[in-house]
Length: 473
Picture 1 (cartoon, helix red, strand yellow):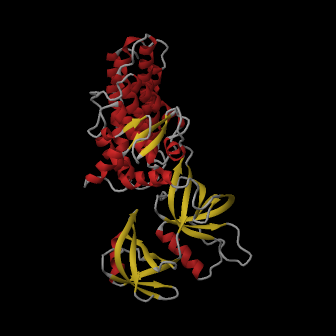
Picture 2: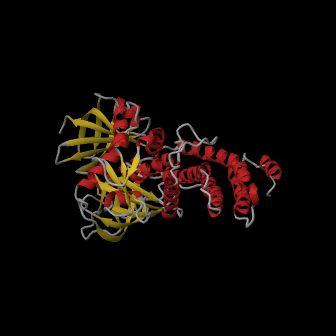
Picture 3: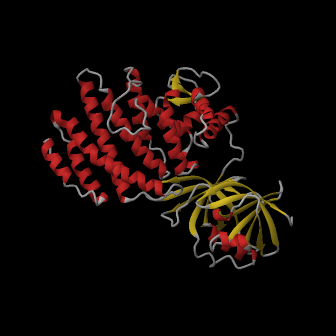
């Protein structure tokens, strides 16, 4: 369909009440238009017609993602089709830009802006599902920015009706936002944080700029050849003709000055900068491993398994809820594992897990450790890789009793972390349990703990990490 009137009539009949079906129909027609050998002069008009329903589907997906702010949910049918739709629509705009360039004219700024905006939306959906940054997608964004920068139009404000209030109005603003979030390593943070960081960065992207040479203490290398992805270039980039520098001074100052700035963004960027100034070697070198393990996650399941182990229950045939996984490497502070999703409930960065080796030790004791997920990487085939940091000290399964147990709403199971080196205690329990300054009784298998809650350290999926003082210690 190449006649705008015919396309409008067809779009009016789309079954938007069935978003996955509507997305599939849109994708079939859009591919025919974008890949038509001779689309004619109407291509731009047709792309704008398709933009409306694509925006509606994007809004549906964004609302769904906001319902689940913490978890690594698998990519559903609608999201999978929408990623293809966004890419196809972007390719249509880039086809127009290339046709203009072939006639020895500069590509229109608004055409390049719309292509970059569509690609950044696709990148953001993948980020919120913990996908790795696709090299081709990053190189395409980089190419658009470098072309516009060479034409001195990267900073030109574009009036696009589809732009949201927090979207930068320039090509360089979109590029800097995508770059900044990539530098923060989204795999180590929860989707809710990434969304808030992206929103704030969109409003303040004008405080960012690239320079030929590092200026000031807060300059981060950027490989404009596209060979190194943003985070790798920031960590390992060396001076050379393909290296530029992202100046973060004004951006970090704006973060410090804004009382409503999102938490964690300043810390993520300063940690990256400090990491460059220190040794590039890991504190604890990794050792390659290839060993089957079982993973337990969820407060109740971890509690039940630890409780069984403390009581001396045999290791095999007990953990029915355990998820098979394979250890990829290990270090003194933790290990990496690969497992096959989807999981219900899904994994979350920051949650506590228990890992047990399949093989029983000669003594018959369980081999493994308790830890917290610090990095999570997903993929289209629903394979998941996690980096797990060991929890220091002992992890004791306890049951909360008394008035505090009533606040836990039928979930009295908790874990008490005792760091023997520092004498620090942390209670891992349902969020509803927390009342600063209150005392509670936690019954362990070996003894009773009278705890006083001192402060809320973190909340992950309604599970709280609470600093406590053990009066009986």
